[in-house]
Image (cartoon, rainbow, N blue to C red):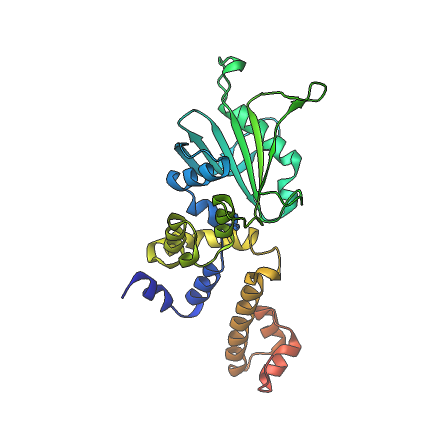
Length: 284
């Protein structure tokens, strides 16, 4: 039996977990950071977004903690460095509030503070990129991406300080590699990915037994941070339904043991009315 067949043969709570896992896509940031932990995939991402086919990633750290001794610290979704010595912070955001300009400014400053050396001259500071991949079009101008650079207003010239901020429109589906990449970010089925390497990595963490084991401790984070956003993605509704079905089964067993309805409600979080309907053989 193949790994995928083994995964599909699971039952009970494990099957419910796997159904939730199948509903994830790369816009779920905790899942995305697992998939992109391989430098090869982070390299693919940056090559497409920056349109630099020769870019080579030599370091990639998902969920990288960046410390600030005097204020807020941050956890970067993906921290990467290329062979030219440039540094990247790649953030996936479903909610627009998480991609606010002030957040971009803060992350950019943290990058500078953490990659600079005490004796380094300012002119030798490496270039940095803060890249937000947003599920919706943050600026609502129907552009595939938005590049933010400091400029001298009176001269109408770029400031050229080496700090770059880019917003990628996750709704873009144009006939380009970037449009196809954004389609992959929303895709849940590995076989339908435009980029084979991304599809293979997604398949591994959804259907390979070792990959699924890797995801197990991460699912709580995904449920807390990725699931809460609403019913339109179906996952929250599925989770709630699954919890309720398990509570019903537990309540039925307690009713068979003649436990008081109020006590059953306390342990199952079902309402007294729902439990009474179960006791009368009705669907709650």
